[in-house]
Image (cartoon, rainbow, N blue to C red; front, side, top):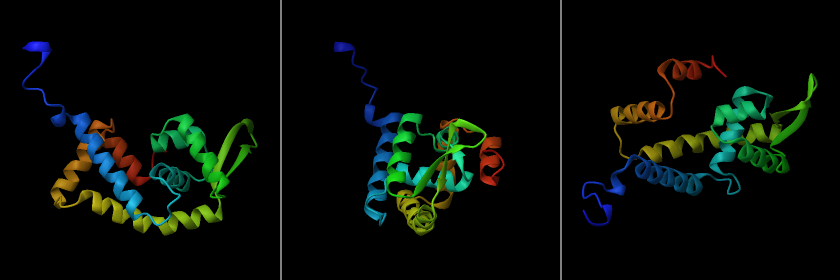
Amino acid sequence: MPNGEDPHYHFSEQVGHLLRRAYQRHMAIFQQQIPDSQLTAAQFVVLCAVRDNGSCSLSTIVGASAIDQATVRGIVERLKARKLLSVSHDPLDRRKVLVALTPEGQELVVRMVPFAEQITEATFGSLNPAERVALLFLLRKIGGFDEAASVALEEGGSR
């Protein structure tokens, strides 16, 4: 094989490439369909994580959203500037920052959820119900979620 080429290796068939393409498609659908042009998918995820956890720390948001700490800090600052989040110090530990939805943030999440559901539907495209279940199962498995953790998260038991 000249130049170390493997005739059987095609990057376009590799899992990382296919995941990236699917993610890019989902992000394009999000930007096309979300009515708030200033809201990114990552910002929406952070808002939902705060909604689901109540007033919480940055590390709780990081864990819930799977977005790194530095990025979450920047997102929180941008959402705070839009008055969608409030930031305060934990009265028991002044070093700890607590993030909460403002009434405006709560209202935005409520308004955006139906659009997020439509975006998910558009991302699924023509997949039939069995393919949708299989895709979500495999993505959770690849993402390192075991079945017990998935069930606990769906039931709201583990935060």
